[in-house]
Image 1: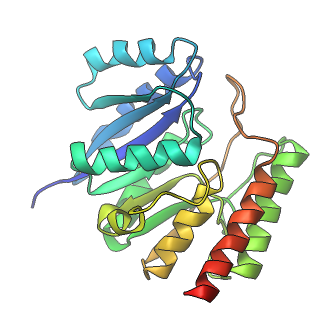
Image 2: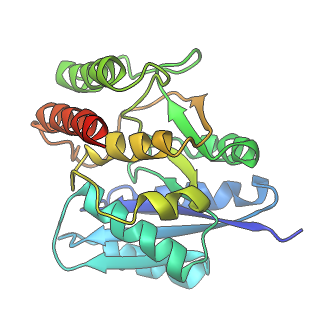
Length: 245
């Protein structure tokens, strides 16, 4: 049976402090991912540090490492939208994985999550199911953004999922290609809610896999302070669209 291609998309913006460590960590577990060819796509949004140069150096060592760049920073959701199209059209992706550059998503979870996707359309790394965990030292505003966004999404959209705002997700392109025919409602962090809702409406089988989310210890957080407002707007727009459909 032909091995499936899983492309791990890592958006970057000024991640020179950690990007090499992240890529090496994924390299160390590639042999543990069975029946799949694991590729990594770095999508850089006009970093002003050495991120691109460091990735290009590692490309000499790793033939499964790819790099795409946009001329200016358009937002996390926009970066993923572009990278998802590239992964499908140029890298022949059967599975696309959303993954943070800063190691807050622990690479060790890639192995079991890619195993679970053999029987699912989507596997989400979830902090809010049994076994999942948030950083104990997370700043209050980060906890409020995450927990309030999830509470409102469950109230307004569906109670089926615990972690609407997870940014660690593996999705089969059989479903992904259909739901990204049009851009996300938000070019920023709110895309997570939009993408999950689109997959839900397609009746994709979505499995939440427990993860321990860890806070970055290198570089600076990219989470905008207005993320909660943006997320609430996306949730309300999604509900409004479903009423009008």
